[in-house]
Structures are given as C-alpha cells and as structure tokens.
Amino acid sequence: MATNLEFKARCKSLEALQTRLAALQAMHRETVHQVDTYFQTPTGRLKLREIAETGEGWLIYYERPNQPASRYSQYQLCEIADAAALKNLLTAAFGIKTTVEKRREVWMFNNTRIHLDTVASLGQFVELETVFQGQTHAEAIEEHQHVKTTLNLDAAEPVAGSYSELV
Image (tube, rainbow, N blue to C red):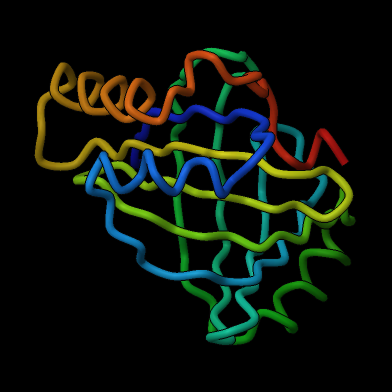
C-alpha cells in the first residue's frame, strides 16, 4: 500500500489561509464537490468518492490511527468507471456507514496535498497529506512540518478521526 503523512484541523477561516498559501508558494489545482460514501468494514475505512465536476469515481481503502497529531496512513486507490453501479454493489455487500459531502480546494506544495474543505453540517477544515514518493522519510517529514508551520497549523484545533466519524 502507498503511504502518506496526514494532519487535519478545524479552521475558523479558510480565507485566512490564502495569504499563507501564497507565502508557501503552493499551487491551486482544483476546486471540486465530492461525495464520499463510507461502507461498513471490519477493518480500515472503505469509501467511494464521487466527484461532481468530472464524473470521476474512486474507491479508496485506508488504514490510519485516530490521533490528533500528524499520523501515517496506508492506502490504496482504484479509479471507477461506473460509480453508481459500484455503490449499489458495496451497499448490498457491506451497508453504508455514512455519507460525507464537501467542497474541496486542492493545493499542492511539492509532495504535499493541502485540502481546504467545507464539509456539510461539520464546518471548515484544512487537511495535509504528504505523499511518500521520491524522497527520503526524513525529507517527507521535514516537508510536512514546513507546510504545517507556514500555515500556522500548530495553533489549530486538530481532528483525530475521519469526517465519517464526525458526522
């Protein structure tokens, strides 16, 4: 499975992060509306992500501890051609745990994805995902901490779990 280093925090104002993102020289990639359907599973988390703007679907399985500090996540992704059919199949097989709708701005700084999320009924969040790809473990941790520091996330209210557990 692939690995990344993640951090999530509540955010009082996503707009306030815009200046910090400019100072970081992060690149805006896209703004999308995502619907994540989480399924009941005995281990890990399994979700089907549907992206309204592109019609894309992604099946995502991941294992990550619930802790407020930065934590490692092991994950697998699979692009899905027919998300509606797969949702019906997974619903029949496992049952739906919950559904999470969000507006997500995706920014990039090197190997770190920065998500500015507005989640229906939960509020605003910032999430970092530093992907371990082509750099040493120490370099990935250093990049992750640099992004956290530049965005002043050490002062933010960390979130230990998944959006699925907050709904």
